[in-house]
Picture 1 (cartoon, rainbow, N blue to C red):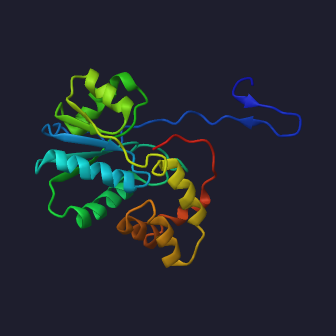
Picture 2: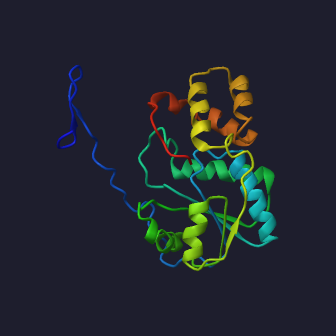
Picture 3: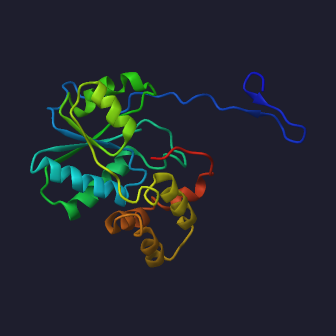
Length: 219
């Protein structure tokens, strides 16, 4: 490997792609929101694990405001990040409308910066200064605790079944299925019915057929 070019005896040269340029999209609001209970996720896609976590967060908030941060809003479309933050916001909101109508929930988009030590300061410009962090992710809990946030750690049930990469793999296999009802029925094993219906009817499922598989993070 020299200069980003991999050469083998039987394959043409492969040039490693340049690192993704991470723009601040969207830009932060001029004034950070008021502190409240915050929950973060990539929601690629929104699945039953996310639903259970939000259920628990709303129970903890006891009628107070919950702010949901959608991460990776500035990532290029890929098998790891197939849906835009606006599409993921739609997934969250369609589930909230059926599961928690009237709940005080706000959804904000947060771009990645690939800089963990400065993440909390960066993200706070979008989700507000220190309120409370509600999470099932150990590294997230540690980052926010170090930054002085009160942190509530919630265990995630059926973590292996509800890992984002596993669900995306199943969805990719379904992405060429033209029979609507069977496809939705399979999806509802891990995805709320309202979100599964949205994915199929809006064509958000079928785009996965155009992405190649590869190693990817849990999300």
